[in-house]
Image (cartoon, rainbow, N blue to C red; front, side, top):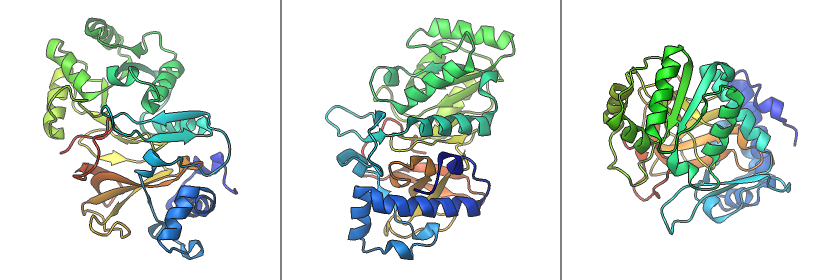
Length: 327
């Protein structure tokens, strides 16, 4: 394995990204058993893959049925997806959790700045009440690294959250409130906050608690309830070690080591042009020890500047706790 963690997180341009992606592809195509078997069944010659557009993407469902690993190191942690009772969960066996930590810490710095400038508040009851959540792992670390005395979780104690938000506003403290969608809606039904500087980041998902809404309707409700101009979102999932972020309007941008490509819904091995809707393929180079090339069950489109939008899910896809709302 020629690449290192430093290579992944020091990418400066598209050429460096493609060079490293191809190195990681060749490693995983040889050392990740399920990916190697998939490529073999597609009759793809690894040596003839010389560009990003030639790389095959592993269907995300394999994380439900196989251990997707590209080395023989023991797992340090296993993240699992949320789901309804009886549904098979995805499992992501992580052999180097520092890759995940560096990914979310550096991505936060890229999009928001120094972590220690912020207070982190979390309203994530559904996630807190189950094991194996990669989101909770990240939020725990952000809360700790912020070093702010008011950072923390608020399970159902909305009065305390309201009081904390008022105090933080009075101090002009930079604050991030990350919450599952239904819990944010529950909060603003009984408490109105006018905190223009607040970053509200919704993680998606009603968890069966409320009817689904289109994104525009949801975000209007949240903006009015918190007294803010935009709603932020993160696009991540159990099978990835990186997240993309939206600072408003449902337009997402990737950190430098992550990229979105769009596949044809009728021909999953073919990619389509910017601006057209299709299946979302993710290249996540932080997945160096599992598989960096994932074909998700989300539908979306990539814009000319490389940003992307999530437009829904394939009809036959499982309901996922981390998926974004159908627009």
